[in-house]
Length: 364
Length: 103
Image (cartoon, rainbow over all chains, first blue to last red; front, side, top):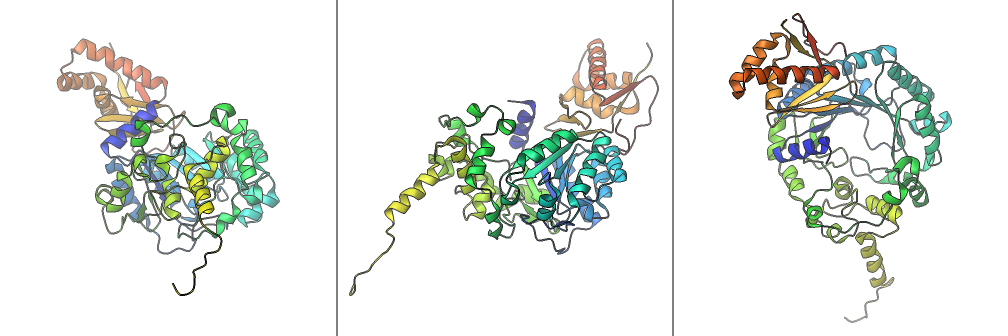
């Protein structure tokens, strides 16, 4: 166990919300085709409300704070919020598209001791990136921002979401990140909209592309090890949780809504009406999330992939049951190892049992 | 021996977890966990409290032999200053109330 894992374990034992993702706005200057948010401003928290939330998070013991959106720089007070967060000694990460970052903003972020800036890049080709963001010239501005941030000595991570529109550009974005001297991370999963709308799931990459990504040495390291058949499930695995959402991490929306995670929109409270710690300690929704161990998952507990699966309880929740499987993660486990998940086998079995046509005799 | 003064860098994140201080440098992402004694030294590292006063405090709070406490405190200060998260000087320092300059 690494030192960070040990600390995470201690936070879990002590019931501390160690990592918080705070979206300060849903407004955005880009209009990404795959975005899961509604960009209208429906009454964002004010500067003083957010500072009040930060005070409460510091008191609750939060260490990692991620500011995200929407586009964080759409808020005029964003750097003021970062400065306040750093006064409270949070480890601050910022997720942005970088379009509004110039030398001045980059210098201020450095001055404030921000730990990391994550910037979305969809393609190394402007025509593809800009078609996804629906903002002409956005790739150039984003790359300029990365250079400004890098010149200040800040740690930058290029985040590459893969979808049908850019499925052939992964290696190009990776090469661009290398050329810029920054880290690279890939996300091959398009998630449903936060309101449950699944229309954007059509943008998910083909299984053959997912298979290629999961067998790419540049991305996963040792392919044989990464794609090996799952090891047997033991009692510790059965007692475990698949994710930190609601256990040591939590999400707060620009309107003060608290969810276990941005991808797990289970209403758990609102910091405009309740104290954060009251929500964290007493929300029935969070208590329910915490009560679910791997052994309590009716399908996944029977799955050979259980110990190594990246099952997202939020995606499962959006598929209709937080104790159910997440089809996207079943697919990843299958494409990675070639071994179908329990959920896939169950569905195949159901298909063979269910007749295509059911005829009810007259008179019965 | 001349007096020393300790000051926390502004380029760090820190939080108490179960009575022990967790510290992470924004410069190189090094993560430290400080035990209870080190946590008291860390919290007292305000730039103007002399090291001797900090040592006296930990001797009282933890019933540690003064000689041992002094050596431990100096070792601690050296170790953390090597990573740039604690600044050691021979004169009192103005510790910044805000992280305005990542040292």
